[in-house]
Image (cartoon, rainbow, N blue to C red; front, side):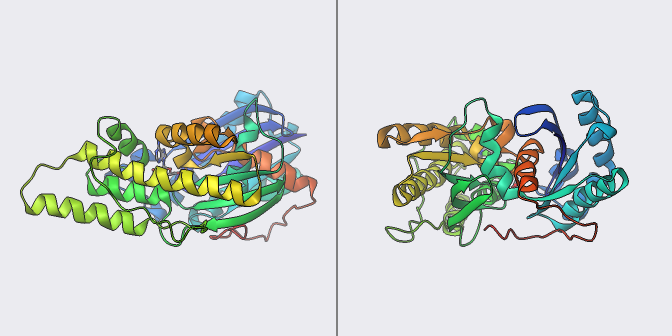
Length: 334
Ligand code: KG4
């Protein structure tokens, strides 16, 4: 079965062509970096408008790279939520319209399911069940993945997502948008032990997260330096902030695996591209005798290939949408 997948939940317009869940024939991602960079963050209305401009060229490029035409496609899978509703509506409506014209099925995909299954785009991926950490700009959640469409949430952030904290701290330090890669690069030049920022454990057994206190602590530290007229130790702040986030993510992910009795841990979402997180997770899992899997960075951040895989499994369960199906801003999985 040849699948055309579309993703437009936030600030990337993406399309992919897959043969079932096995062969990725093409994956195209058009970034909106140039649109949002001057504002230091995503402007939802501008995001929707750019999706409208980009959707057809991106889909056409994916079809061309896969060496197929629309008439070869058997199934269309598009992100239905969660995300920015204006952005979602562009990709999802486009997908439903294409499916209607071609008289083929269309599946609305939960973006979280995409991140939970993105590891299947790799040559080596784990069998089921596994524990998964999805850590992105909009979500920080732990899941138990027991089937290809069976996901149970174990814990989630009570305030900011980890990626949101990276983006806000980067903005505060004048490092630009998106903040995650900028902080991660700068952290490489700093000392992770220079400043002891707080870690929110929320109790010994809790699998929930909180990053707002950490963010406030960074703001206070920066204000204190400015008040004293001291130069800002930007690299040390980045390294120490990143360490505080990574330590909590690693500890809680391992805790979740332990609590569920799982010997396999998978990460996904934009922050999962962070080299320090990947390395610390790998080392800790080795010590705990847990198998650790992380998708390639390009499949951690938003992409349509993962939506194609999740859409295919959802289709096999009989979940197709009618033309009047609406997008959703919050995930029912979370
Ligand atoms: O999954 P994603 O592309 O979009 C959402 O669904 O949110 O994640 C984007 C988030 C942003 O907050 C971005 O700053 C963060 O992932 N991110 C990173 C890195 N690369 C992207 N955070 C930390 N380190 C990175 N290398």
